[in-house]
Amino acid sequence: LFVFSGILGNILVIHVVFQSALESPSRRLPPSDTILVHLSLANLLTSLFRTVPIFMSDLGLDVSLSPGWCRIFMLLWVWWRAVGCWVTLTLSIFHCATLRRQHVTFGPLTLQRERRRVWVVLGLVWGANLAFSIPALLFTTHIESNATMELMVISCTTRPLLGCVWKFPSDRQGLAFASTSLALNEILPLVVMVFTNLATLHSLAKHIRAVTSESGSHGELDKHVSTERKAAHVIMCLVSLFVVCWVLQVAAVTYYNHDGGQHAEGLLTVAHFSASLFVGFSPLVVALGHGKLRRKIRSMILV
Image (cartoon, rainbow, N blue to C red):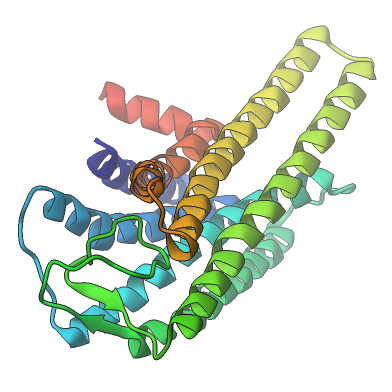
């Protein structure tokens, strides 16, 4: 359910966003929709090239890669996973910055500058994470036997995925890379996203109070406040999903690498499901909270 709902959900979000852009007068993606497309793309690639093979392995199918392909696939898995995490943070920071902006100016030039900034940031996210993932080309190998993994970086299963495992010159170097990866690609975005979303919710609450204290049509005020509250609910859903899934992931992988006690297998199983849950449903949470995209998805379902 998680695997195929995630694949279909991400394809649906990408399709709806591009269709909405083609129907708009500018025929270009707005900055927030651009970030959403990149998030959906990273999650879709992760689902197709990593979660589906895990699903096939769980069914009992023996799928294996050569050492060369193992290096390439491990690079892609680490890269796309990290990109998904950082693009989620980028979306959160963008919404926070938009809400906290004092003077909002509209026009084609302003949108063009904002669009360019978003593309530069997304390019840096993809490029920096690709550079960080290069060690996968050097420290990945293939094993034939049904061995158990001794070191985890992004995986939640103790079985080697497609026969691919990490192999560092020493245990110390392996733990150093795994710990650095967790700190940079899991814990740092997690902490920053929590504080960013708290700042966003504070700005929303402040804005709602300011709007309700102003004079004007009561109906318009109610509508405006209702929209703001819906935005707050979407942000809360996204950050809650992110925090729960990634905390379980970090706890399980850290416990396995440093302790590996009797609770490791249970923690990894829960983390495995939570990772699939986030990859599958985080873009849908954002899309369904986006008024235009929600209406488009509803009309597509009705048709």
